[in-house]
Image (cartoon, rainbow, N blue to C red; front, side, top):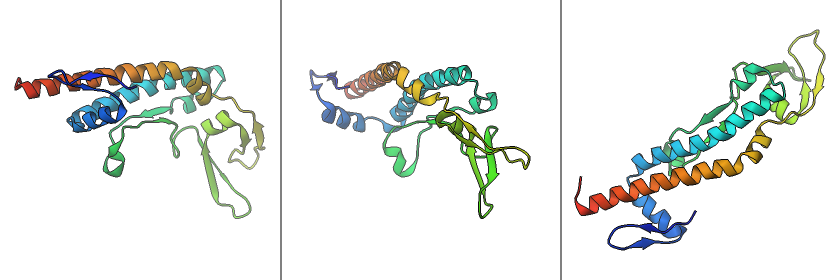
Length: 178
């Protein structure tokens, strides 16, 4: 996404290295939060398609309801880059099942979304229930593949807007206009 960005006084930035340097010089707190919003919106496109795919594949509604997008600003070492997560929670939510493993009898668990996405052996935690093989009914992977261009378009447009806004703000600051 290399762009030529006007910086006032006729100065132009060309190429990713120069662009990255200019972005780092901006007010990182304000524009970082806006970038997280853009990334969250882009992943939301994929989430909606994954929900649609899961419903079409007859996934349980409690599993589908747990699909999430986490686009919150990070702290510490992870604060240096903007990222987001799309998935299902790991533990203690509807759609999470536990069973006793063998031979030690320790508790093992997994979100059912993993079983539906990839297939596998389903072992309900009931002495009378029989284990059964579940065939894969993918939702996440097809959503990511089919919505990739749309997601990249949302990222491109959103980040262009954030960058344009930041550049205009920097020009106003340099000109002394508040």
